Image 1 (tube, rainbow, N blue to C red):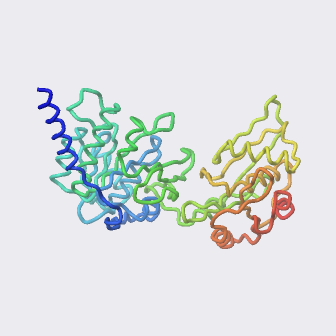
Image 2: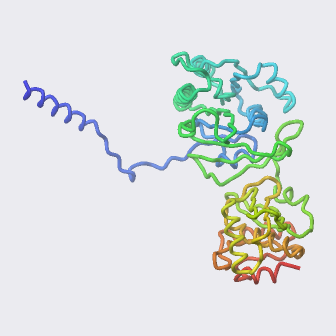
Length: 401
């Protein structure tokens, strides 16, 4: 009996091995994804050139930031076949009010439904050019006993929508709310299910909105799209560098730098305020840059330049709400701090680009020529970088009045 069972196991193992198919990568032809333009150039930039057919895209952001407005604007100008807007939160009348405010076009079909199986049947029957699900936290399946918005419901609903998107080659956008901790409401595992994760950010007190890709299987995650929220919806900012510098004041602590967002250079203003502290431990507060990076720059300024910051609070801000993650802004941060503590403004038409090393030296950054060209377009004639300054002391001599 044991011999028969062992022979059976061997046969089963052999049969399973026969099913294994090995693929050599050199035999695979490179795939070029077919993209559909959204009609919004800033949106296309973030997506990597347009919407890929059959992709599942998650758009997240704080409540009221403009997610529904942006996607409504997108679908109103999309294709000859009407898109399908699935809403579990708003009525068709509410969506019509928003659509009329944005555009006179009404090339949009609305479905008020939260059952994901009904939604999938509607997609299969109607075959829209594009689908918006607002929001994924309201969608559920009757196969599970948990409530809508729970981890199991959100994950299962997203998986089912992913399958229909791939099988019918219809792009589906999922709108997801953000929790107090800044993560997409529901499970983080939802970010692994989708092809693209977009986040819409901005200060509620400002009209500026920034769309960035946190994940993109079909393109770069470095690009950002910049919009302004107006009465008629989201308006693209065609010259973001000029917009970021429109309100710049010629005062101590204000410095201009050029950052790269993907392939696009942007001029932004770095502001610093250095003031005497009454606390035993001085504060180092950063908004728009990494706080650890600020701590490092402050330490370099104390050690290599001789600034006395041990009894000074240091506050640094990137004007306009933009987040700067690349080290090319180090020199501008350092110069803003120096300018503030010395109470001396920066020379007119001067911009700073460079990474600051622990020894106080200026290091090379990528795309310097492209940054210089963009700065000169906006009238900056003096660009301080590693090419004309070896260290912070030389940068101070070239840039401080």
